[in-house]
Image (tube, rainbow, N blue to C red):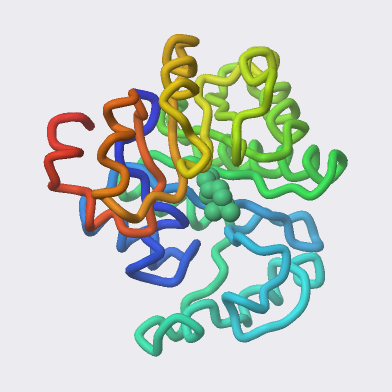
Length: 248
Ligand code: G3P
Ligand code: MG
């Protein structure tokens, strides 16, 4: 097992505002051992944890992340949009999130959100720098991205890094592309996965992780296809169930 069977998506985003320190803590509190979070760069090159290119959906601010720096990003409230109970949550710097992940003893899937080739390289360099500064144990970090350049750059900086290919639907030449990137796992949208593809991925010796799975009943057959783990907003609905028992 590369990561865990049940991975908190954006932390545990049904229990706290996504991609905040509160969401990471909430995941750990329900027994999650790995979390997935999204990484992006601010205008000054500081990596932060945020899904969207703009701050509008998940904060009280407006505009692209590139319009903020490490001083101004902390002025945004990233909790009140979700619930009054989370007023005061911030968009975490990646360094802060990694420190918390370490403190809680979790594993982390870092998804690099990069728009283009050049941005991908800058993001990978910044993220790898933070991973190194945080002294994250190798076996507890899995880096993935929809942008192949982000993975190529990441691996060039750290040959031992665990890499996951992220696709909505697996492309035609997925084996070759995964091999070229030195990937250990494939991550895909479960709604596009078929038993034939799942079997082939496992036969290729790769880990298979599906996003975003929030319905334990609907996903039951997929475990039988060899899926290793899921990204879920609702880890509390999966942990402790028969599906997850004994398989961590
Ligand atoms: O990494 C899996 C999943 O998070 C990819 O999609 O849009 O939720 O970041 P998204
Ligand atoms: Mg993600």
